[in-house]
Amino acid sequence: MYAKRIKVGAFVLEGLNAVSTTLYFYFVFWFLKAEFGFGSRENLLWAVGYGGVYVVASIQGGRFGQRFGYLRALKVGFLGMAVTLLAGWWLNRADVVRSVEMPLQGVILGLTTIAICFTWPNLEALVSEGEPGPRLQKYIGIYNLVWSGAGSAAFFAGGAMIEKLGLRTVIFLIPGLMIAGQFCLVLWLERGGGVPASGAAPAAHGTLASESERHRSRVSPKTFLRMAWLANPCAYVAINTAIPLIPTLAERLSLDASMAGFFCSIWLFVRTATFVGLWHWSGWHYRFRWLAGAFLGMIVGFLFIFLASSLPGLSRPGVFLVVTVAQVVFGICIGLIYYSSLYYSMDVGDTKGDHGGIHEAAIGVGLLGGPLVGGVAQWFRPGSTSVAAWAVSGVLLVGFGVLWKLWRRGVREGESER
Image (tube, rainbow, N blue to C red; front, side):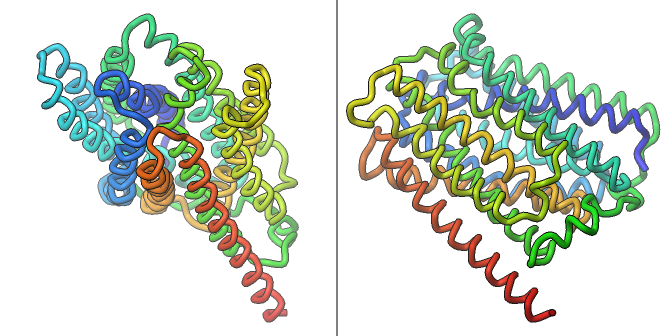
């Protein structure tokens, strides 16, 4: 069992990690647009590379933590990210030629992605490992609020910070120094004791849901776990298509970096508020209509975020209203989908580092899939956000069809067991 101070330290590390990684991974596309003239197509293709690395590295990061200890894995991740991000900042100070810097920035993006995959799976495991059911449910709620709230605040303020301090300072120097501080915090936590010899702590947790909740549906809890693991990568397909396209959307709406950070962060804050509601209300547990409704709502919200500016007869205030409502719908739906994945994983599966790595790898599939589909669509109509939005929405509809098939098969299996 990890000491309580280790658990508290994990939440602090989680919040700092959310701020620093949001500043880099969300705003690196603004940097690529400003420094190298990248459009939505190029940004999406770079996001494909980032997602592909994330899929593989997250599994390895979780396995490393399980074998050698979660805190040791965190040290590897934080040290790696600090070095790569500070190197990205140094490239400009060293007056590296632009034609050389661009591929070097690609290397930095890849190495930073590998390093981050040693952090999130092991933070999840560190928070959850060895906790009984009621306390684990509380910790999951806190965990979701910390990372989503801190990330939302970072994106909200990031645009204004860029205008005051400059792109390179905000996406490289500040996150690099923050992460170096996180590395030092892990060293301090280790010296205080209360750390098991390996990644695995004694499994003391029970199930999160009550027996009545687990029998609400005609399908088994394992089927809900499979459906949530399908829905969560699909949500990240939408999210990680949206992020590279936001600079182009902001340009269409005539928003500077500061206003884009304020306006385009609505869905992030709505997701955080959704986490609060889902933490304290259990009515959605093991109810298919909530998961299915969230999936369809996510598709609609995603589409209207990027199509509102091209709707005929819509005034500028009308466009902002539609995009605002679409962000609210999008934030609520992806919040429920993410929470479902984590909740059912804790209720049905275990909470080891390996499991955290698989959970993050599933997210990585979304990081890869969304930009890949959007990037391919951009080859046919360069610079258009609408073609990428339609292409990704088509893929998400296919995903919903698979979700429905899993549900129907689960119903048939449940009826046959009776």
